[in-house]
Length: 159
Image (cartoon, rainbow, N blue to C red; front, side, top):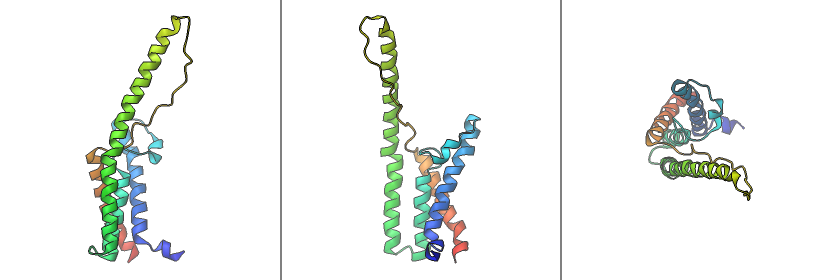
């Protein structure tokens, strides 16, 4: 068990992802003037906790194992893929969810308008798709910067 307690890259990544998730709450409050505690466990938003975690991990691996090591190369490439996915594929999936939710709302409005007809289709309540999936590039950048800073700040505790 002591091995895991001394695993600097693991703890740097966990601290980074936790702090990034927590930061979303006061940032949302500043923008919307409401506390939304569910952001602690949600995807998307500023800063990207995925980016924060993978950059903290890569930075810590680089410090611990060396920036020329295979372990750093592996963590850096996986980190780049995660960050690219967060700003690309997941972001576009969220944009598609917005469009699909609008179509479902408009369809339900059409159904409501058809209630005056004799034959009424069976209406099912559709669950809205999650729209906040990915990140804007600035959210990925800020998450990455936060991860590097956390790895550097946590490092003295693991010497």
